[in-house]
Length: 316
RNA sequence: GGCUCGUUAGCUCAGUUGGUAGAGCAGCGGAUUGAAAAUCCGCGUGUCCUUGGUUCGAUUCCGAGACGAGCCA
Image (cartoon, rainbow, N blue to C red; front, side, top):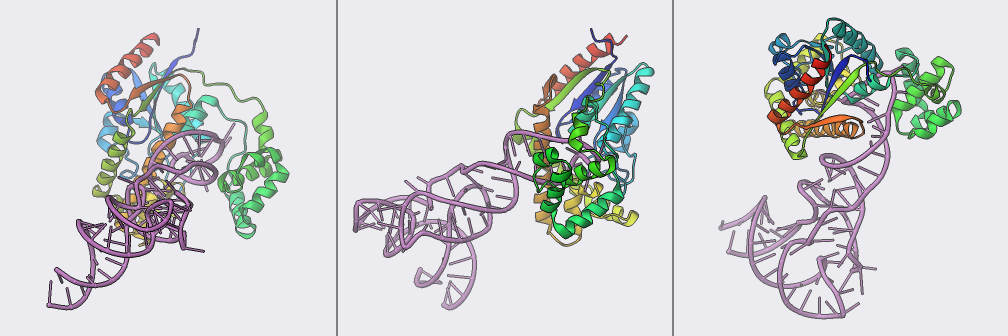
């Protein structure tokens, strides 16, 4: 018997209708609070390109973890885990059920699996490592990692710059091999009774159509103006996580005159489709999912409502 | 109307001195532990426009046709 309180995950690729699904639950009167699980929605002033719920929608259906940092700042899976755990405890204490809705599958995964006791990211050290890599190249950095942590080096491609950098950072800051830390027992599992709903398209082509439609709406809705505004308001660069978000990177390149509008549209669309594909890959590997077809919106909402009602009732 | 060039993967194009072909992008599959909308790995999906001829064998050479682009009328 599971004595833990309930919590609900609503997961799905971009443009699968997660926001609508979450709002449907809230507005049908179920005792829930929403937590966003999205690495792009955390940024203030990035509204159009992230397809953030509108001000009106957020007023009707408040989401936690939206607009919490500036586009110059960095968020992380580890920070998300801490933030989400605190919010879930609060919501549960208020007698409500936390609904975690979003598309950042690493965050969902981290929340469920917990994290090992790895050192926090260190911007200064990363800058040093990056400068070194510029001099000797990433294959040589991979070679250095092979000395410090052969197990992790064997797991990583010499081209996987981001993970090589992180593994070196972990070794240097902790004095231990990352693989040694990961071999230690993981932290406790999430103390909630989970209902995990996955919104998956029965037809990928339909999702692609939705993505195209939404991207067009973003362009018409002023994505370029938004990026111009962001660049005036903040000291941004293309290597910041915020500006690496799908759509923003391509809009930036267009505004710089590096690509024309047609190319911007094509690259933006392709990047969004590729994002959706990676999200679906994550979902295929997850256990205990209640999978609903995001193409059949009304049916899915009904079924989801039924499941959630069942869970929230058992909470009493 | 005449001449020239072109037609090869979903797109842009290479290539085959005649032995049924390969890049980039797109797409598809996978990995994923403080950047994750990130980062990385794997996979070629084809009436080589059609049709006659030459040939053991034609996507390749020759003829005709279709379509497209350009130049001349």
